Length: 150
Image (cartoon, rainbow, N blue to C red; front, side, top):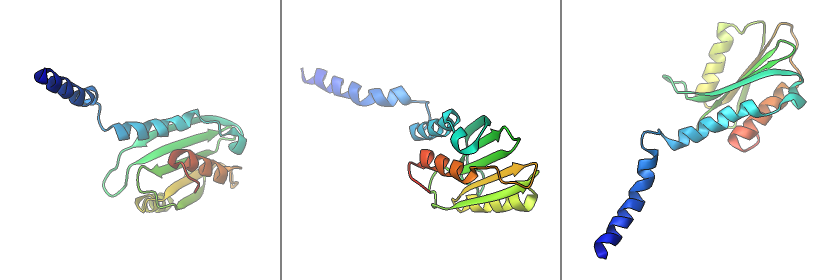
């Protein structure tokens, strides 16, 4: 009887470990699911016509931390791009406005801010006009991803 009880306890204790063996870090999987779920959100109330949203987790590289990358393409042709640090968000936001493509210095500034664990975003438009709702969009993304307001 005692041997059967010990065997049952051993089976119960080892079963969860065997179930996730090779599945990677379950917290990374959960973070990725939250990040990718941003593709399913409706941001049209703040951005107007949204043509598409892509979101995915990008692993750390060198000094740059890993981040959730969210890109929204608008009907006007403008693009809003946000990068949210996976861990240790400082509570800060850094936004750059680009006419046409962002230049190398602007990208360096974005990468520096991301390294400091700030949420970074840029928006590029063919005209010198900020797409409406960029700040509200970024605030909503931050609220959904981190579960708290910026």
